[in-house]
Image (cartoon, rainbow, N blue to C red; front, top):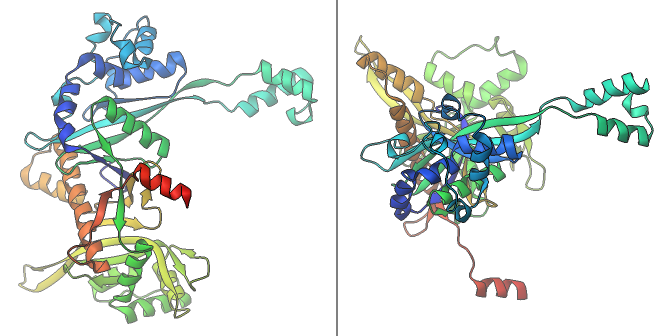
Length: 441
């Protein structure tokens, strides 16, 4: 978190906030969904499991681990269904452990806004050794030949006599809940993992809603890029830099005296001002389609994209990284008027902007470039370092703002009228009558 990453967004029902807050105070539930319980399930029952830790303590389960004698009982409890757990009683040594988050303060990011943060930990039981080399070693020692040269019966014997080294493999990622906007932000792109997070939220009494980026335009991600490219300014400067790149190395190209323009042509192949007066640049990695029927060509360098886009009249970008900029004017100490461009957000735009299988809208390659600089500047000015919850809440605030900016900007670029909806919206579930009609067709 706090840098470039990939996020899945799912909807959450705002009216499930109170039930969620009640769940956070329920000791028997919280230990069952905790990483303390999930890690015990993986180690003792050899099952993949997901658990949670508070946002401020990513390894809380290790800091206050339960004794080895109690782990099997904790594993059985955490792996049980809720109705089964109702008839079980854990000993105080487990139930009153400090190795899991309990209560609102462990998860609350803001005192007056319904923002919450936690770590989701994925535990997988995996072979962490190189099993092929173990079999090879056994073949050399026992049968004096490589494994591939063994007879089928000998291979079966070696397979039975060799075992890899298995252990719990741990991966974790942040989960941010914004009940004000009705959205959950998951820093993960794996469909199975996102589904597991949705199940965890259900256990915490949070009702989830399938959402997607929806605009009433066919292939709208490519259309946004096309409209931005059509409005490109500094076209001759982009072309000149692309021509120079065919004749000189990057070090040999003479930089422009205009530093603002130099940053534009060095980093982008398109720069357009949209109606909101923000600027949007397109950079690589990108894909360019030379003809409507041709396969897209992947490029990284902005100059390569400019060259391809100039090869045919039909050439268009179909994917790319867009960066929103604000152009700010100021006076220096000499009283001279200067301008600079502040990068507000960057994100990849392509046909993978939705994960429809799990009902999630995606932010791929998402970044708030100025986030770290702004906080470091505030630290220098105030001489105070923000608390951990302030780091998390500031990131959530700026990410929510960035998503709203994207939603509105895409509406402007696609020229939707006031009545047309567009943005991250709930996906419609067809009724039984509609399903029957489709089946008949």
